[in-house]
Length: 228
Image (cartoon, rainbow, N blue to C red; front, top):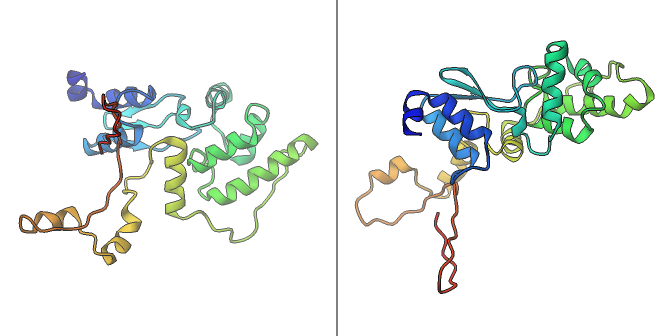
């Protein structure tokens, strides 16, 4: 594994991420480490993703649709339909071809994790439109050109980030989850790592962080021990 990590890092991380849960670290930590090594983790895309994570270039891996929580067999259905009849042209084309293979909940998960962004970048508008299409489909009107209300605002970056973490176990952005919180943390007196390194030895300070991996090993005494 050390040889593969050194000489074939993109296939190595793609394989690890495709076989989760596996090992000690969660997908989010593996994706951060891949980025630290210069590998871009591309978002899921109904017109580019396979079911598993794939290597698109020596420094790029694509999130597979199989990583979307709750999608189940729908991931394979999306890929098989695309292989059979070509890329999806727009939301209506997607709805026409996948209705019956995907239910509304699975479709909403694809929107919320960003897999339908290439068809329309506004995820809130996409949810509105696809919901109308799914409701109308049993009446034979799946091709009706529904339009969302004017100026329907998209979800903000924080909401998209949360949705991706919830549904993928990792995020498809290069930004850190703490980025929008840093001004509030600084106002509360929280020091950054860079600031902490300049403080004299022995000085007390407050810090904040994300728990990457809590570990609670069993003990003979029965006491609860937690590592962070």
